[in-house]
Length: 134
Image (tube, rainbow, N blue to C red; front, top):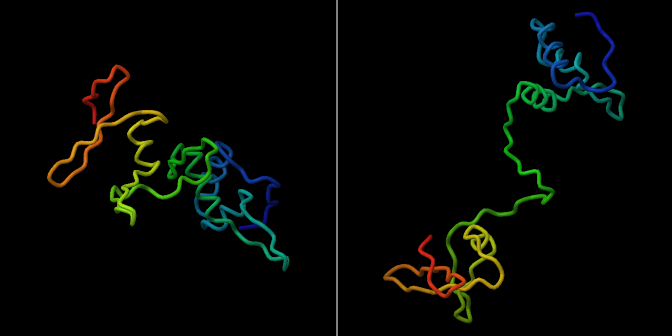
């Protein structure tokens, strides 16, 4: 394949799909290079950004692998394990992940029901009656 000029900006969207269709007989690296997904290293070598190329190709086809919540909150942290331990002072701490999942807000009240192998929290509504939702 003869060398062609590499685009300044990597191709995206329909332009990327069209260029890949034109180069259907080329290798993956050749396609990525032709679509502008290369960087020049400090040593002056050309490095193909295959992962960026494949991600752009998937995005151009309307496929998203990452179901990221782009709300500007950064990383989401650990996911709740639904297990807690009693602390040394006897307290049982319910973390923010669980209260957020319950829809609890600061100032909400709960009744505590002790079962044989469970502790159940039921939200108390504004009028003082227990909500039956779980």
